[in-house]
Image (cartoon, rainbow, N blue to C red; front, side, top):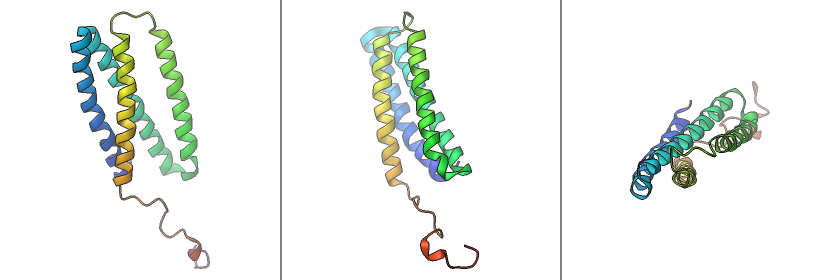
Length: 142
């Protein structure tokens, strides 16, 4: 993982973890232990899914720049299917508060995306690789 990718991952994960702790506290206050458990599971789900997504795209970027978009979209599809599967599988489970789980997933998804976008905008990573411009085409070794 490149240092910029690690910086972006930290920039997204830290605010999400802190927001997850707030969500667990709110779940505890509003729905008791079941609310706290639902919020904790929702926070863990968001953190694991988004972290895995970033790690996969970062790994694929090292292999092939052209495959980054495909990896991101395929990863999104897999995560979407996994969340739908989890929700369907755990539909009747009453050990946690489903509302706390759902609202936590929604809120932390927004937090992660906003923090990741902020970290990307503040990263000093070039979006064009140096030395691959059209002026370099006529040079030997290009």
